[in-house]
Length: 66
Image 1: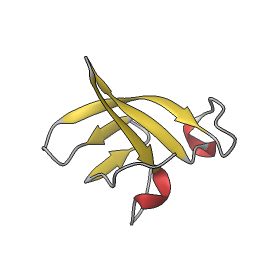
Image 2: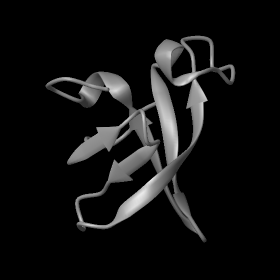
Image 3: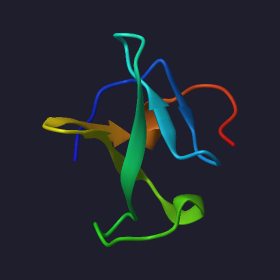
């Protein structure tokens, strides 16, 4: 799964700050095998709402993740 680099992600709040400045909920987390998992085990995620969805590769983030 490939994703885009986000401006920011808050794992504890399950929120994604998109490059357009809007905040979207993270609705799914996936482990290395593509199975649903908890955020602590996730390597990728999906954020969005109402027809706007972003695949997120968590390895694209720099800095601390909480």
